[in-house]
Image (cartoon, rainbow, N blue to C red; front, side, top):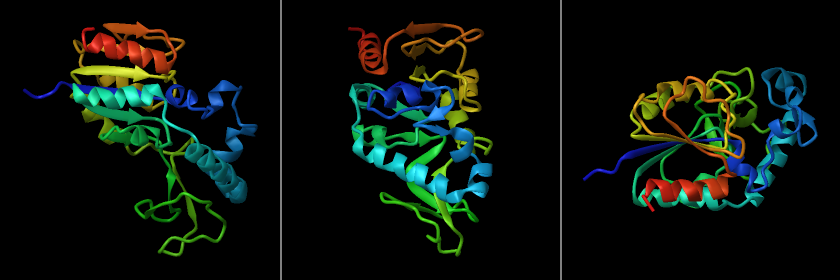
Length: 229
């Protein structure tokens, strides 16, 4: 008998409990930086060194962070379900916790790419510096979807969401589009669970089971519910 398809959309709230900050915690400031100065194409054109410094610091933060109980809990659910993670996060904590099917909507901090050819992508654990070039001779930049850039992986995420037998949201405010719009593609009769310490508005999103807890304890509760414990 095939396992039910469990599709999980995760956001910053799941990584926050591993110590990774989100700009939405502090009035548009991200560890003291205005996101418009470090996370937009305009910022890159204006001051690429500042942008690289910011993401080099964030890369170090991710490498130092460890998966938490929520990451491990979602990985453990693979024993019972066909689990597909769709994450807005750029860290690799789902991978390190053992999840096998992960789609990164907004890129990955441990990868870099050419500014001229988006298909030239390379692994990176150290720093990217001005003058570091891809094989096409173009400057390397973080493999991150910045604000005001298109989100190409949305096209891959939509059919995954449509195929869900169970849909779960963990640690996202559902205000960052187009990612937040994925909930509109969940089939109407599919059970839906939202795990967050503050449940976002679910107006027009029917059949929702709210679990108003932080990600770590909320995923533990979700596991009990899904396993009928």
